[in-house]
Length: 210
Image (cartoon, rainbow, N blue to C red):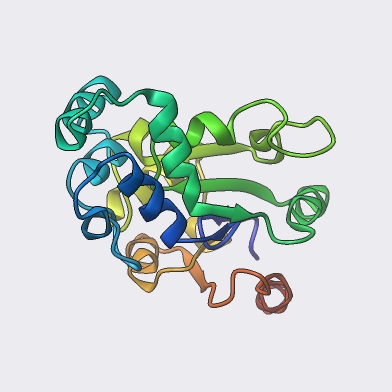
């Protein structure tokens, strides 16, 4: 029986948009911004490095300032990176609360960076005066762990940290490549193919384990 639900952020809990973020980084003066953000793949160069925690925020800002030939601030990068976020699917937060009330443990596992997380963790991001992370038992973020999907070690890290049984755990992502590592450590997986309309099919999926 499934007891633990682990969700990705972009394309699952949130609806993503791609070109807006690329345009914002281009507006900062980043040459060939689109080459760093290839859809369906992990981000390249320093963007991938800051997401997996191999470079610090300060080092990232120094390097991107050099690339853009002007001093770039944390706030400018946060705004540009937030361009990837379009909106939360209708009813998403209420559904997370419903699953929690049904006894599921709820987690987020995301390849992400301090700039995006500054928005996600900010007060007032979620409606009704609740912070976004209050809907979860715990958030696992690549830049804080020092590991990133699809490395199987990041999934094992989550299992070990929360003492979860992989046979009772399902990982939900919109990229097939990110499901492979989860399956390698024994988790069940669910692929999101429509970020606006996946909750119904996922409920059907969960019923197969009841």
